[in-house]
Length: 126
Image (tube, rainbow, N blue to C red; front, side):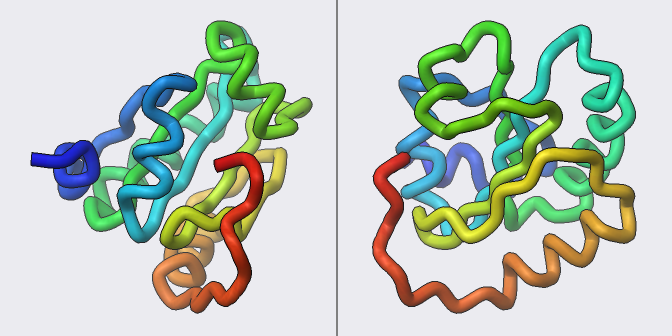
């Protein structure tokens, strides 16, 4: 069983580290990655929306990266503000934005990620 199969269909979020980030992003068709920190109040506001999205959309991997413990990955990803949400389609970065997405916006992001057709090469982050 591959790592991708372990992530797909879980209906929950998964903690990602520098060691497994690349495989999670490349090994799945649709992936959200949420950069957060334990003492980040805006993150506390967004986390329930993100977890609900994970439960409602088991076909999309919902990964989480701890800003405080994964410094190298945070730097490589160019994340400076929290929370930051990234979306990957077949390993390619297609969306990156800091800030809080409300449930309606998150649902629209899910819809757009599922429908997105990416033609460019994979970014150097991967």
